[in-house]
Image 1 (cartoon, rainbow, N blue to C red):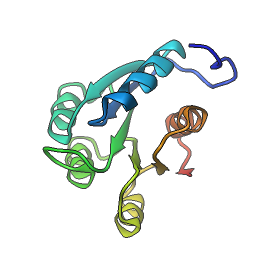
Image 2 (tube, rainbow, N blue to C red):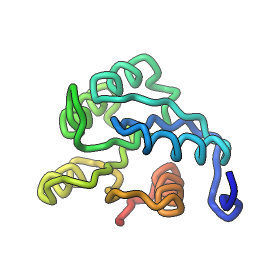
Image 3 (spheres, helix red, strand yellow):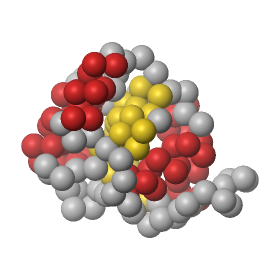
Image 4 (cartoon, one colour):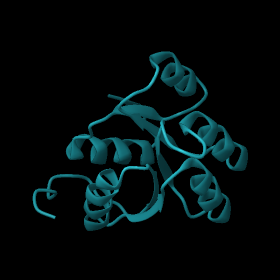
Length: 136
């Protein structure tokens, strides 16, 4: 993928939880071209099942807040029940600021507003994987 040369790569596994195909397409291609492995869940229930089946393999979750079959809030808590140390980065274009602040206090690693700008997302993912809090 052109133009990714200055963005940080890695070899970790990222679970993308989003119900919009346009989001998956560009994120998966970009992340894979930077060396990451990517798993995809189209809704919260699938995300919890994937995480439960691979708790030691998933290094980070990029979690959309508004989805069918379990929204981001419920999905956050269900993944945290499986792994209290799970690194979860929240993402949404339409979400209540109070809800985001609450989940950040509960241990979410940060929040990214949609629409995503690829360099911002890639750097935020790297920051979360490196143990930093993300504020965007």
